[in-house]
Image (cartoon, rainbow, N blue to C red; front, side, top):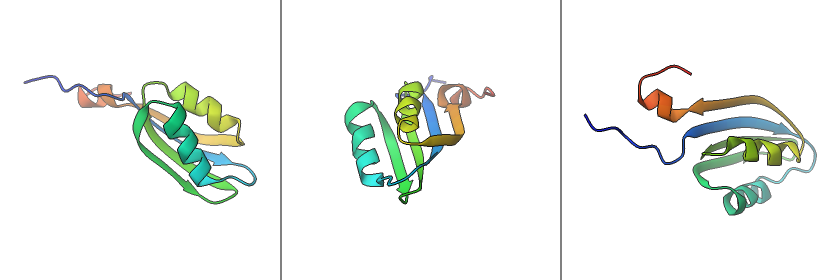
Length: 87
């Protein structure tokens, strides 16, 4: 059985709580500055949900923290999941 290669290893999800948040600006910034795929940035001026597949989730977290408080952070290793491992 061939080993499946995952281009972007970490499924990164979080919420940003702040003021005057702009989902379009956040979406554009992430796409222009971080390598990854499957980006969702949805919400309103006070709360944005981020979902992004990347190999460098810490960079996404650092950027999002600059916009407001971040919480409900989930980073899942999709490579481990593909191999049937937990964590």
